[in-house]
Length: 292
Image (cartoon, rainbow, N blue to C red; front, side, top):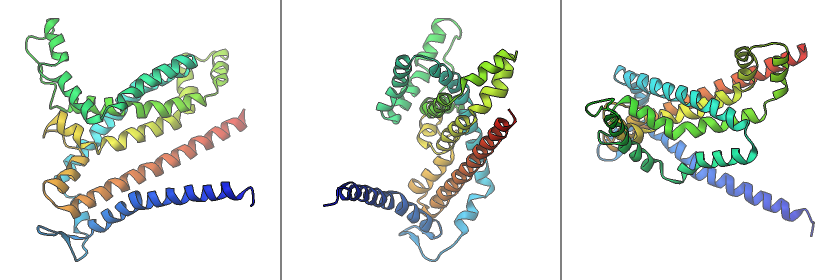
């Protein structure tokens, strides 16, 4: 028996199982959603023939423009807050000892051992009128009566940041790990100020991690309907809330599917932008290296 046949057969088995899994649980559901999005809604059978593209036209109706803008705004604010917190945190982690870095990364990942829905309910208890925040502010005489923190956009953003912050930190840590610190030292020796070194050296070198982290945070933030439901009530709607309501409340599966396909296309567009930006950054980096 050929000594290479066993590893080759094992590799084929792994590839076959992986492709089968992806086909059944990724490709097939997406194809079903795409097919449903072009069917006609029906109260009795949920979907019926004939094929129609009216569901996609409804996505662009003015009534959903406010929801789309609100989703973009809240996702953008969430991404910005995660970046402002995650960037210095990732920088500190990258400059710590390996042991301390592992400990802090472990502490950051530990909350993921608990279901995110339970953690959002914990945030609701913390921000409630009798929660920790209001109790502390009243104890210190900062306020005389409880402040309405829950069921606001502020609460939704806090919940989204809490859930998605690690997804910003991890790509940034990877960028800092690849960082050539000698370039920063050269800039320092040449008299560049800390701000100049940050803008012209550190920021461009870590730009791929920034772009990747922003995409990983921005896209899921638009679809986390349960965060908006629990912390924002009926006041704060994301695109995920519209999709959920179409499937579970209105029972308009074709329109909900069309909205889902729209979100997938939006995600694909952002990934293309990321790829173009990453290639441009690498191209500019190559030109800079040639000019040194």
